[in-house]
Amino acid sequence: MSESLSTQVYDFLLAGILGGKYAPGEILNRRQVAAALSTSAAPVAEAMLRLETEGLLETLPRKGTQVRLLRPVDIVDQYILREAYECQAARLYCGEHIAAEKGRLLQLARSVDIGVPYTRDTMLLDIQFHHELVKLAQSPLLLNGFDRIMKLGLFYQINMMAQTEAQERASHVELVDALLTDDPRAAEDAIRLHLHVGKTLNSI
Picture 1 (cartoon, one colour):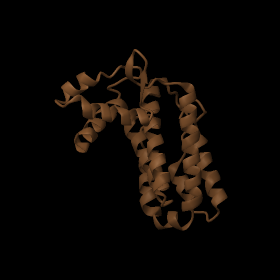
Picture 2 (cartoon, rainbow, N blue to C red):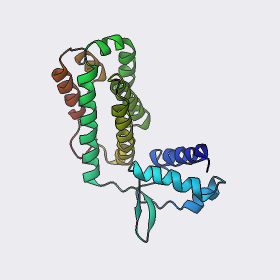
Picture 3 (cartoon, helix red, strand yellow):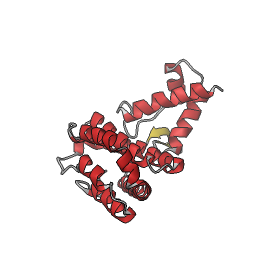
């Protein structure tokens, strides 16, 4: 089996899930996906298993593999894990790491702040900004965990957009300034406050 072919199938399905092509609860038939991509069922099965491991698909007895349903407990868990990753990262990168990248981070922060709220483009910019912050912690495992949980976060947000009401938005520019502190506890408090502004535990 070609690993690159499996990765192509994975990318195709991931784009469909995060792009709204496949709705929560929709059954994905391996043979149909394979036929659509002119490939065998083997790389499709491998790609779907990877997506299931990442929490975007789920297999149900006598039903098959479906796009994961939106369950309040899963959304709360995703939010809790995101906060844990970001708060730990902030303790590691605060101060000089932020200062060294301040110009680049502020440019990205402004792009997020002026973006149209609750659109996919602005969500992607927001995730990129926070990815760049976590990356400054220089911990590959921490970054990989964050990226994985944010795939779920984007999936939840995209499928909840129609239910989203206007909420207060946190300033990313102000966050960069707050993270310039050399105090890890203050940095952790700053990122936690940022993540909580305009959010509740049933919305990400």
